[in-house]
Length: 280
Image 1 (cartoon, helix red, strand yellow):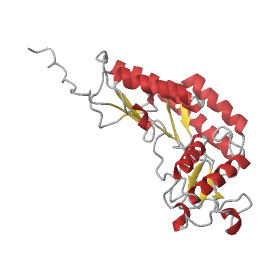
Image 2 (image 1 turned 120 degrees about the horizontal axis):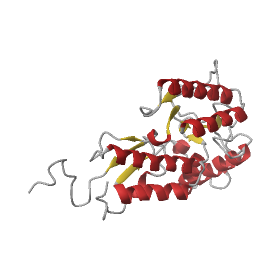
Image 3 (image 1 turned 90 degrees about the vertical axis):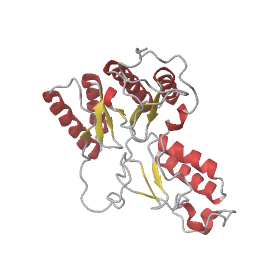
Image 4 (image 1 turned 30 degrees about the horizontal axis):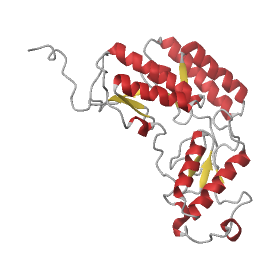
């Protein structure tokens, strides 16, 4: 673990807000961006909220996923759209990131938004029709230290929580989440449909420059688990602090999009193979 005296600096921040693809400009406005500067919301066929985006997915907004009130969401979507009309794409991107941080996904191509914790896919684009079922969750990571009985019990609790959320019983869903966290050290990712031990939620990337020994991997995993909790409680300053600490102490780069971490090559050097560094 030690070799971290001078571990290089910059670049640690570029993964924190994770690329979600589709940053504001793609598909937005469909070639009409420059027109209608005065008051575009009055001259086009917008809805009563002043924009042309439709909500899809579960219409009941789970406050555990999205703390914003519905009128706040509509106001942000409308303001972002007007920024794009005025070609102020920087402010439009800033508003998009604010929506994402608060659990709201906006799809410019479909002209739709959702705040139900579901990810976008071709299969769920038009999910307002047809029978709906509770979301299915899968285990992420090997679950080191858990017995087969514990994994079975966790799986059962995660399924029960999903059904509670589906039935808008958020109080029961929150109780189960606390039980999973307190009893088993498990976190649930509603967006990806996964559950994992806190220190296994971020996995070692296959393209890592170096594979540290197991005890170091556990230390890094625990730090990443603390960061998961910080992000979940929206303490982004602490999350950034932990990310920077991992980069400085272990040369770890974190990718929030893929939920992976990797060891970087040391600047101006390389990792030695085991057993060769002591040879003359």
